[in-house]
Image (cartoon, rainbow, N blue to C red; front, top):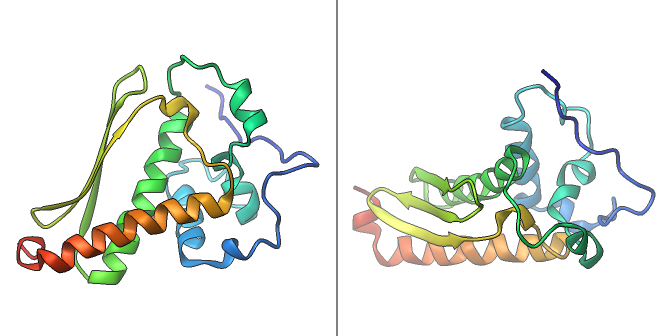
Length: 164
């Protein structure tokens, strides 16, 4: 059995180590979630830039990925870490338990749900997950913040259901 280790960063990484996004609560939680689901500790000694590098897919990187493909377990773990981070941030904001559920077929299609109590605060269809990524770190943070704000708005509107 071989242990897959993260790719060594190249000289031209897509993330600037001085990027202010790395200091945000979302980026810190993303790094925490990636490390939490790493059973072998391969991400423990890596910097936040190196841990988040696989999430940034520049146009060149995206062109290298085939249009049709099956997701491997590393890509599925990345998706899981992204939505787990959003669930944790929901919990921090509203003090209610947020539960993420990710269901994917072997072909890379599926759905992710995050529930708070009996309220579904995020329901998103996924497709072509083998190409999961964002053009930049700030775009990833913006997407996470957008999903978080919509979820918190739903919890505010339906707090009774969320509290069940």
